[in-house]
Length: 244
Picture 1 (cartoon, rainbow, N blue to C red):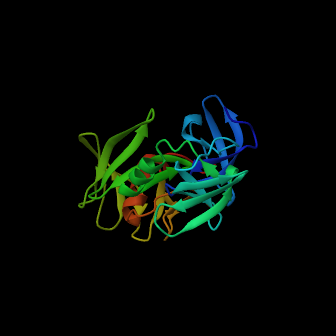
Picture 2: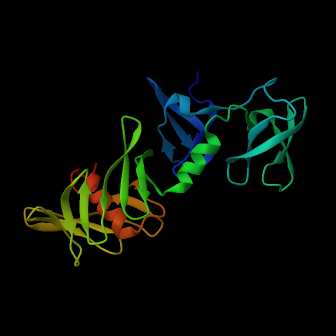
Picture 3: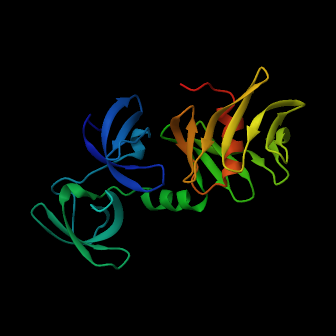
């Protein structure tokens, strides 16, 4: 379906679709690397091919590359002359002329997925969607490709998984699992872990929602309160995995 090095449209961490290049293919998934050097690992059927000669026709609703940010945005084809396409942006901002290879004709799911991505802040881990954060503290994670509510971060600091309280973060930011102190999260997004009585920082959530583990940028939690994001990643990743 796709070839190594082929340029495609793929969904980035922020939920928008950008121009990328297929860097590897393994089974039903592939790695797409963007111009900013970051990469995602979607399923092959979640990647959209760029149009070729004969694919684009006047009146078609498509997604067109905007070179200003290398993103794809909805538009309608006005005319096609050779390998040049004139399209009107769906937001009414005017027309643009692009090459056929800068148009996506197969737009299945692009608009709906973007709307879903913007509905709740999305959590990302190593280039893949980890889940979503719902206002009020509910945490949704993908399990076998299905988004499931795995628990919540309550206003009183309790962390729930399914119907059980698995731990809590007290008023001082200390993280407790049962009666054992496992670490600390701060209002500034720092994550500290207690190893045999020695507490040390293992990660943090920066001001832009970037998630860091041992100095490595491992994910994103844009739009999630930093203390809640730190709690989510503490219980679901940072506390139990060494930096690698």
